Length: 221
Image 1 (cartoon, rainbow, N blue to C red):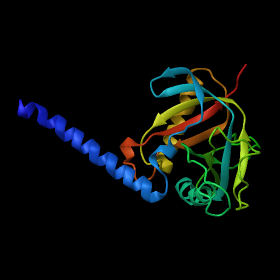
Image 2 (tube, one colour; image 1 turned 90 degrees about the vertical axis):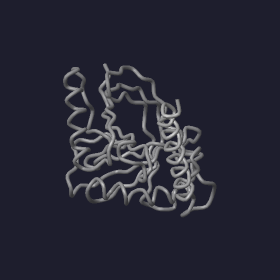
Image 3 (cartoon, rainbow, N blue to C red; image 1 turned 60 degrees about the horizontal axis):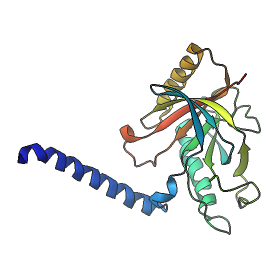
Image 4 (cartoon, rainbow, N blue to C red; image 1 turned 45 degrees about the vertical axis):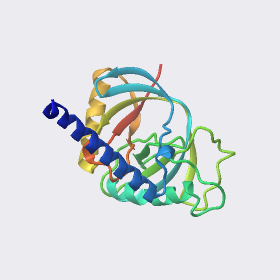
């Protein structure tokens, strides 16, 4: 009987240690675990394996655009957005951090980004964004002090989404972009613009535990 229960105890201990380490890391980073729970609201329309179709509600996104490759832009874009939401470069209250962090190629981005016309290569610009909590409006959000940070309202959209794990490297992003577009074409759906990538976990999360997504807007009849 003792041998039967030992693996279960070990699993619980590992999970407890992992949870404690994550909580300490999040606190050290300056965000309480409860703050990073809100995600953009959507209605699930269809699901097949790791492929979903979702109807998203309108959101406001704080965005910054940077030059360089995908991973470099994502890392560099985090700091000015974090300075904005944590009120490190402006007066006023902090804004609760939400998930995910989004990333889209900058070329030919319309005002309602992240609609794009083409994907980026290693020398392209990328727009990195934090979604604002749903309780805010354009009128109630504090103005960014950094001129590179923009507040952009995004309308309601229907999105095709594929979920994946991993570090979100350029190679992984390209592979998952191809998988998404293949499934969209197989179902006879019409994409609008280029895919957007979404990253839900902090960088210290082990790659196989991470939740990443690639999504593309769909034309609606």
